[in-house]
Image 1 (cartoon, rainbow, N blue to C red):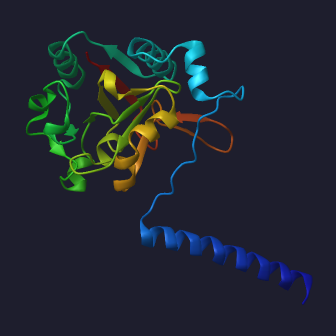
Image 2 (image 1 turned 90 degrees about the horizontal axis):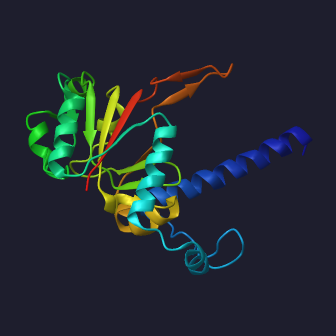
Amino acid sequence: MAPARRRAHIMSGARDAILGRVERAVRTGRIPSAPPHDRDEDGGTRADGDARRGAPDSARLQERFVLEARALGVETYVEPTAAAVCDRLRTLIAGLRVLAWNPDGLPYDCGSIVDGALLGSSPRADQARAEVGITACHGAIAETGSLALVAGPGCSPTVSLLPPFHVALVRPEDLHERFIDFVTARADALAQSSNCTFVTGPSRTADIELSLTIGVHGPGRVAIVIGP
């Protein structure tokens, strides 16, 4: 067999193998379990590391998350009461056309604020005209300042992706130190969902000349309101 034909045959075989694995994964709908992550960078166990630096507490996680999120250009607010969270949300969305997760999925009794708003189940053309999207979150990752939004009933991914402005409501119990901590804690929800959106600051897009543009492929403005 000529070298060119042999290379093409090898490439075709590799492609078929990859596509076969993808097809089997889609057909079974199974997400492989992550391997145990019980060792830190120094080779010690994770428990040893936690003992050395102290197990993460909510105050430290929140402080780290806020620091990282603000470094990404996220407007971050920490409110002392549920009423203050609602007041902050009203201020942020005043006068804007709202698209929201289902009201009963929003914490701090904020559902009443978005009553009558467009939902993720609304016609897509109507959703595209929204000026702000309001969501809760399923995870807030302190080491990167990222939000994790697991798609599901009443939690459409379009709400955080279509409008130019995204407001997320975060509870202290949503905080996780690392990505692996979130995946471990929400493994069941992730396995049952079609996708999970990770929001790490406003949308950033760079072209081949490395010119950075904000808000082309997602919201150009992101605000996070953390409650008690």
